[in-house]
Image (tube, rainbow, N blue to C red; front, side, top):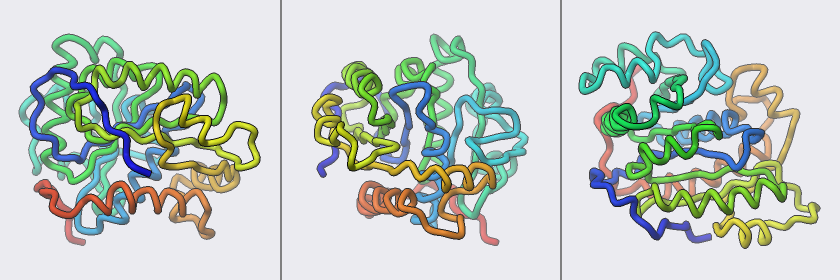
Amino acid sequence: VAESTGTQNSGRSARINMQNITVIVSSSAVVDTRFFAQNLASEINHKFSDQSVLAIDTLADDNRTFYFDSLNRLTLNELIERGDSVDRSFVETALDEYAPGLRLLSGNLASDALSGDSAADLFITTTQLADLFANIIIRVDYSQTELWLNAIGADVSKLILVTHPVVDQIQNAQSQVKKMQEWMGSDCQYHLVVDGYEKRSSLSLSEVEKTVGLDCHLALPIEWRYRLDSINAGIPVSLLPSRSAYQRKLDQFVRKHYLAVSEGRRIPMLTRISS
C-alpha cells in the first residue's frame, strides 16, 4: 500500500528533513501507545544493527519508559532546560543503553511547557537529538497530541496514528487527520495502525480506511497473553519465548516502511557503543 503524504505545509521554516523522527499518537486515551511504541522502537533497533535509536515516552510514569524499567539520570524535561548544550558525549554519558544501540528517555511535560517560548525550546531539543540518532521514536499522550504536533510537527518525518477498530475512535481519527495536516510538514508520511483487529469483525479495514482517509499500513491482532507477558516481564514481544503474530506483523511493517527506504540516507553521528 502506498504511503500517505501530507498535502499542506505548516508554513514554518524547518531544517532539511532527515527522515528519522517518528511520532506516535492515538485516536483515544484508551489506546495503548506505550506498548506499540516500545515494540516499534525495539524492532527498528533490531533491524538497523549498526545505527542508534532513541525512544521517548513524553508522559511517563516514575522510573519507567513505556513499560520498561528505566533508571536514567536524565529526563526530557531536564534536556530541554539545557538548551544548546546537548551533544554526543553528554547523551552517551547521561543515557545508558537499554539494549545495544537503543536508548530510552522519559518525560513528564506539563501542557504549559508545550506552548509559546517553551514550545520553541522543545523544537530545538528535538532537532538536536535528530542530529545525534539515526531514528527517534516519540510517543505522545492523547491529551497532549495537538500541543506536541503544533510544536514539532514541521520536523516530523513519520506520523503513526494508532486506533482500535471502534466506530467512535475511527470517527475521531478522521477529525484528527484533518487537523494534523495543518501542523505537519509537506513531506510527512502518515501511517494508520489498527490495533486489536479481528478479521471476522463487522467493521472491515476498507471501511476504516475510507472513514479516516488514510491507508491502513498495519493491522495488529489482540493476542492478549503475549501483551501481558511482555508488559509484566518488562521486555519487548520479540524477546518472548514464543514468536507472536503481533511481532511478525510489526517486523513486516518495519522492513517495508523503515528498512526499505533507509539506503542513501545520511546516518547521524551517534552510533552504537562497542561492547
